[in-house]
Image 1: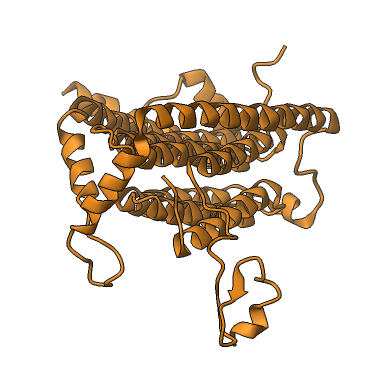
Image 2 (image 1 turned 180 degrees about the vertical axis):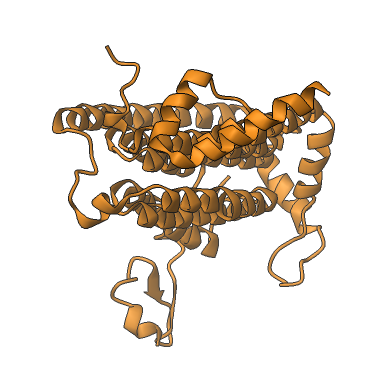
Length: 135
Length: 237
């Protein structure tokens, strides 16, 4: 059964004698703080790209949620790093993340309320058609 | 801090899933598909939180984001009309000049952030070496081995969640109260914003001239307005 996946997973698995496959721990890149920061940065940039390029205001809100989640991931990664380096106040990152989630929920509720009010008045959810303040 | 063994494998699986689903969130044509991809991103990030030892935050993420915020998003998507987008009749992205400028900015941001992470990480590693952090980490690992084993037999029961809860009510108690006020403001604000004209007219919250004009478009409003006219004399009593 494991042999079926062997070619695709050859970077993960290796022969360990007796024809059995086992995980190649040495070959797998071990994720450390820097890897998590890179993942967070990529999620953040995807979110920024969504905010800058999409026309649908609801998808723009979703991209903002992506950005907030990237920040959360950074906070949690740093919290774990500080825990492992023996910082007594390491859990502050997790506490801060709770507040970010609260703010994100409040922002989504208000933002979607605005979207509904806007849709009633202007019959559009396209960002480029919402230009009341432009002169 | 280094994840190893199966943790490393799952970490890569979930981070690739998070990034792919994030890309699809931004690129999906249908807003409902976007929302579903965003849900899978949020779940993958929650899995990363668990791998990083933040089980409480992972639970909050799933309950609040996936269970609350995303359901709100799906409701709003179904309230507004996105038919043209689904049929492919309209462009889902801004005009090409805006998209070009946005993407150039994003590429610059990629290089900037990756450079910053690399440079910062080098500095951090040097500082850790000077402080002898590895010895501390080994000490912590030894301490963790002494903790009670969880029911699965593979992980240890930690007190991290307990300490998060403790700090929420100790040194973070003022922000905690402010957050509750913020949520109250959000509730009241979204209820106010999402009222229909009829509901606004019923509580006499619309100027007379606007109401008169709107009544010509919507005959239903007239009933509300007439009901309202009967109310003031009662109020005087």
